[in-house]
Length: 202
Ligand code: VGL
Ligand code: ZN
Picture 1: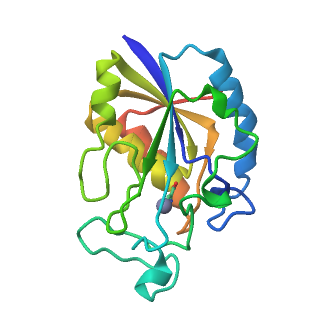
Picture 2 (picture 1 turned 90 degrees about the horizontal axis):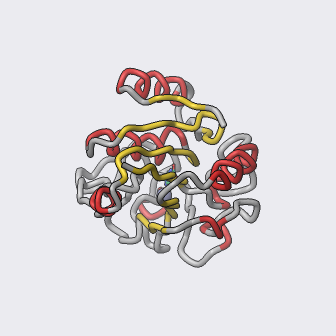
């Protein structure tokens, strides 16, 4: 039985100067680098939000305000966002201070205009992205998870991972939330605790 590290969406648009900024996000970089250097992992996977310009999760493409709630029941929603992580833009690149040479796999998600994907495991319409099968084929059943944003992509990734039967450790000092609604981070951490997620500090 092996362990993997999942590094969620450490991309410029989710850092302090990006279009969908997470407060104090850059503080997690040294912790993530240190975690990766331990190299006790069978594999390190990084997700990369990777949207086309016409992505329907962008509020402007729906004629709505960013952060408005919206759900078309087909994979867009529950929230609409400012334009972020557009394919081949600076905002979609990994932060320059993250040691990306340690990534074994880079999983791009949210690549189709009609479907969003917060989780590295499943799209928002429930379609399986195949990552759970990949990990199990590598005899990986335990995951350390870190990255951005705690209350969206990390949250959905953790909840799906639990459904797929993985044991989950959240690296608590290597994740931060976007707080589209005040209190989202606190709510997420309580939900994780109830679901049996273990918290660890590096
Ligand atoms: C994310 C909102 C939209 C995230 C991605 O990485 O948490 N949040 N796309
Ligand atoms: Zn996105």
